[in-house]
Image 1 (cartoon, rainbow, N blue to C red):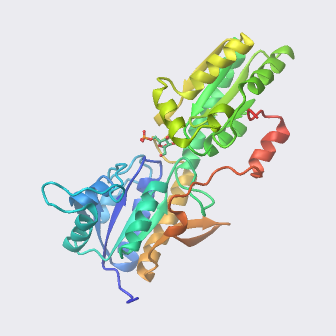
Image 2 (cartoon, protein in one colour):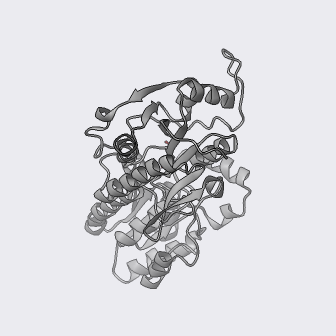
Image 3 (cartoon, rainbow, N blue to C red):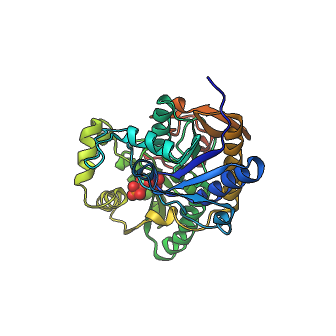
Length: 361
Ligand code: F6P
């Protein structure tokens, strides 16, 4: 392959926002400008802007004061332009054709995309189409394979843990069973870490389908021992043993028909089995917003600066990842369509079990 020197690149953020996105944008762009004299187009609203041609040229002053800011200065969307592509009625172009035309129009030698599994799956498809592309691992869910951690996770963990801590005091005062629902549809990293950090009695995660009788037994055991309250951390994607037997499609339609989130169902089931009073708190988007933690700022900055080095070295088609403290480049095709779930032998899961935390099984 002909080695190209990157003079100008485009950058976009895609998927759910996460603390540290701006720190990563700043890292990539400052290093690209100061170390390599590159020019930059900031593409708006994720892949949507790439298809629609919505972008602006960015300069050093665009990155002032954004290190500590939550969200993303570029905007984001969940658009996946290469999945079920349709022609634009106005231009007659397929999304891939529009993307290639915009890359040419803006005179870009490469793209840097900051996002989670969906974003990097699209990036892998674009790499196959000959686009020079580099991915960065962002998500509060920490569920990207081949990287020890993603930026955004640490901040969300702090938010979730603080919530568990605050709810603990009310649980104790009122002798209630308190359920805290955290994000994580397919992987339970946030639930596992915040549950262990916050001293939860029960943690329910998508990887371990729960038996409500086991959870009720644990809550009852504590109450019989005189501990009238329990803390239960529930990942939004937690599912029962019966639901685990359903097909993906059946589960999806069952969940879509639910007008309440999973923690409410668990609370109702527990009430009928234990008669104990319970309350639910759904943390939702609080976990994604706000100032990134110092750890996430540092991590996102490291990833960003490494991405600029990857651009300069022509290391395309890679996800910038961290493994055992070292920044590495992982082929995007190894990331595509995969989710890092909590394995049965995960050290923190084992630690939790040794502590006597109930995982619903
Ligand atoms: O970014 C990942 C995530 O935070 C998931 O944990 C959550 O299920 C999802 O985003 C919801 O995001 P949205 O409502 O923005 O699509």
